[in-house]
Image (cartoon, rainbow, N blue to C red):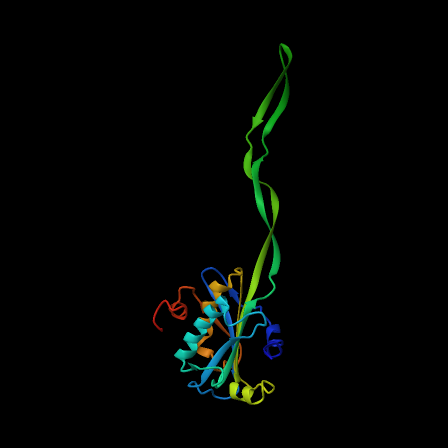
Length: 238
């Protein structure tokens, strides 16, 4: 059931947001069916087929998400009693490589060198011929250009939370899923270190879990932002 629910979701566009070493640009797109009761109970599970709840990576990310959801008033419950089943999907998209060229000047000496001269004079004593060489000073400047090719690889990083009516799922034996809300978070950057980027992405989306952004919104976060540290459990709630 999890795979079919998320097959279409994982095909969302992953471009347009970027993350550098000191600054991270994140896109958040949240939607909810109705005004969500933030006091609801939930159970959090991974949506990826090959990831279990015992996965250390999932548990790390789940810890960040639990902190945000519980701060908003949600509370964790047993899967047989929870009002919401929250499916979590995350990962890296295919790397995207772009190429660019630029030129740099080559500097060197231009002009200069040695030239020979000859001069003939006539006088009372007859004709005389004088020859010699002259050395001209050169000039240091641009003598050419060198072309360079650079490559730049970026990685789309994504997080998706989908909350479903757990009671409806239990009653229908998983055959009638009703989505209550979902939140999609995307950032594209030069790092493929998902563990480093995930708390930043969650911090950027924290205000919108269970809510509705109306459209995609863009957020800019610093890795050392107080909210990022709170998501990681390193500081009190901002």
